Length: 263
Image: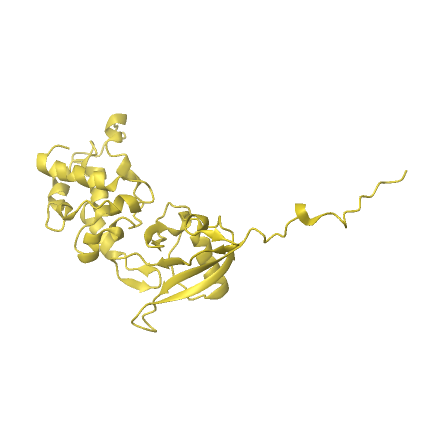
């Protein structure tokens, strides 16, 4: 029995586009800083053919692996949980692992209309390229006692809490300590002694926890001249939060608790 053979040599290419046809050419303009080379930072351009659905973090990996191995940035989980890759992208604080190329640049004729600007977050000392010194940020976090404080003997069972009590501070449990909110705050830019939104958010998480017994102590810490009263309610922090936390609302609730001593 003969076997039919289908000749595909003359088939139209319409149904088999080149594998790279979906790629677009995008320029990433990165603010570079290397204290061993110069005391000044400078912008440097890198051009990539990239899928517009790729993330900025993917582009940074490509640049480091393929073009310049000295490019320095932080990243860990790459899924918006660790918060380590916060940076300014097109003038806004974002997580590089959650920011898609297509969402931050217009694509025209297979090219990005404008370069994508990437730089370190503001208000913290830049160590190299996109890496900043996070120690002042974490010191403020530690200063507000971000842990449960109770008295008496260690319980023999878990400390139960109603769903209503849990909901009271549920929003502020979402913080991943990325510093996007704090480094978007103009008060923090001008005075690094200010506790900053992230520290206040993490104090809120325990001040309003019905199981905790150190609410008054935390409120007194935040009643300091560099504490919660420095907030000017610009909403930059809320806009910058990659987890959607209502940061400004939490800060106002802490202010109200300081006035009324009800929490």
